Figure 1 (spheres, rainbow, N blue to C red):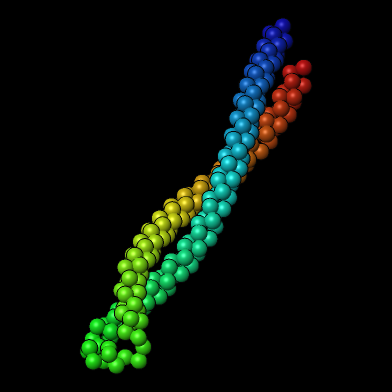
Figure 2: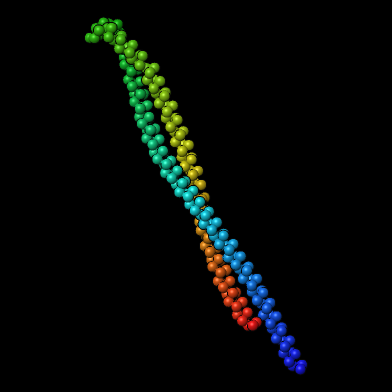
Length: 209
């Protein structure tokens, strides 16, 4: 019967079409599964990277706080040294003025000086011997201030570098946050699409039977 043969042929074509659809569906399901696994791996790596960056930022912030404290201490030390230097300079000026006054005394004034002349000479010698000591102390204080200022500037530079690095890492963390959200959305879509594909395969299998 020609009609029966034609009907049988049409049925074979439909069965083959369904079988091809099942094969294509299984391949798509496998591809979606692999994609979901890759996306899950990407999300895991991104999260690990974010944790590492967060730890780095936290460490940088601690270093910045430490540097801030060091700068405060250095400023105080510099201020103290400057005050001490001003004091030494004041002493130096007073001694020079005293020596000048003694050197300007005429002989008759020295003879008439109420204190012993030997005391006056001893005072002048002591004052003169104190000058080099005060000069040395002032020079050392000046060196200390110069060193403190240089150290403070280095710390300020280091703080700026750390601050810049911290901003870079925070930007990277923001980028990773966005990447994680995108990957998570893609992963969810891949799983949903695979579930839909699995249902379709099940339906086609029932149809083929």
